[in-house]
Length: 81
Figure 1: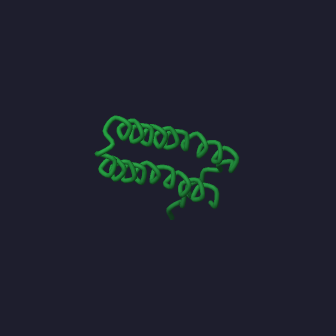
Figure 2: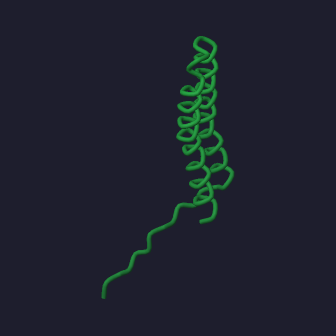
């Protein structure tokens, strides 16, 4: 007969997972700040380009926030196992 070897599941402390998510949220937080700082700076330099800059700013904001949301999902997947 063949021996069945069960794979061990990783036992990750939920506190460590929360710290990992907190550290992972730093990047998107800085990114959002840089995005809107650039939009404000560009609008101050060229007020007529305000509409285009806001559109680009919000679209890149969404892409940056998706990274933070992925971090939340990974945290809950790790925590609920």
